Image (tube, rainbow, N blue to C red; front, side, top):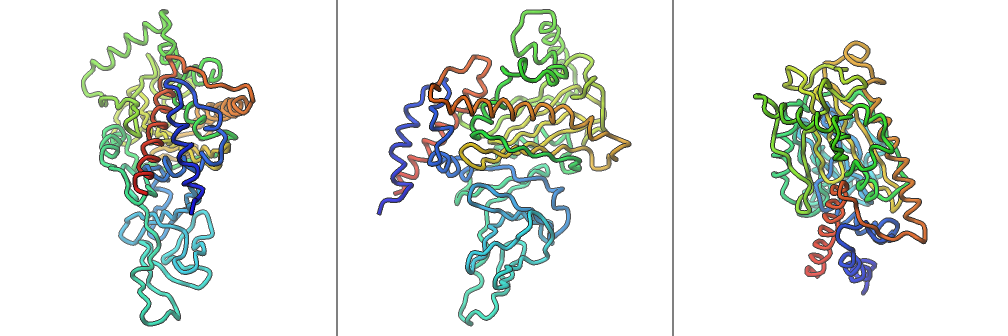
Length: 414
């Protein structure tokens, strides 16, 4: 019997192969419900996705729910401080177990018929079931879960891809920032009325920074000038500064992990510019030093894992999680963090700390929504990315390759 999946696959494979290298995608990739469902299966369920930070569940029994497509995942800490990712669906009749977005539960008790589960998903009580009932085969569905540097990553696939290359690079770039010793000081979430791929294409390039992000460019004037490849005094001064910075001993200066169609992550450190110690209005410190840093080195660390970004200076940072909600709806959630010992009002000011990315992300939401509205127009046709948009072009190429590989793999399995 034909299913929706078997009916869509041949045409979707053909569409994937028809896309032109170095160009934006056909309109249907940004609007189709059927393609959105394939994206959830091929991209979001198949890869390691950032769910949250360990500080959100500091005590055994603490949990939060992460909703991804048609799956609700319980992220919970057990008595041994292990963190688990479990399906929020009882193995009896399928009722949700945790009704709140976050909370505390020593045991996970289904509100429907009171089946009881341990935080690791083991079923310990199924009242009034027959004696021969096998509790050991009716635990909650477990998802893959890995924690590195305090960052919780989950994978909903039956067989998860190798996480070790990602973990190694996260540790190389983020360990000095001490992410296991941070506190989230502010959270803001936006609902962007755009396809998740348009959101990502925007975040992967800075071609738009000059016209749209005056605040960001005021904080990163030298980097912004260098991006435009302007042969002027500002750009030349920045290049000389970068050369001098790298020549100094003792710098946290790992080899960059460049964007590639063959991996789901990239990592870099970017220098702000001469006289700028952190990403603040005047370039001066605005919070306590993070982790192992003993001085401000004027650089920003950025790590991307699929569709999440970890961006941080020496004294503060932001964890950005991008979650598709529908073909033209995407949640963009930002968590700002500081050293766990930092006191608000004394060591940092929340408004000052959140200013840069609060404004910049808000602008990104607006321009991406405008992008979606224009893509929906009947006149839209794919166009080439500019050379400065190489990050977007690589992301799109990765998306097409990953989707095609998954579709063909599923076809062969049948």
